Length: 163
Image (cartoon, rainbow, N blue to C red):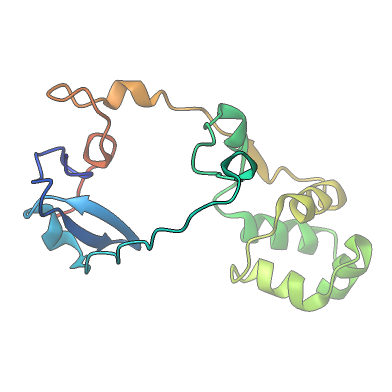
């Protein structure tokens, strides 16, 4: 078993689970200092299935590139929306009426407290005649494979910021 951050060997009989940035990972002793160590999960109780063919097991679902988003919201979307609205001399109420949304939604978007979903983003793009979605380039993760073990780890992809 390998550390999910740096790729070092982790003893299988006693793996360390640490919560780092909200994710629980199996890590080596050194990388466990980056988060908080978690207790081992409880052993699942054996439960006999009446008909194993009817099981809806989503763990075996294969991952597809089609699952990845191809467009992403621009970085300063709230500023772009506010500037486009003000350039047309529209109040937040006016914009809300035009896209059939509440004023509170427009306010939260313009202050950055809310990220609009794709449907709302496209309505804003069309109404304000601005570009809020940009194409995302797919990264080839095979370039980050750990050469010692041949496996991809989080440490291969990210630069780790040590405290």
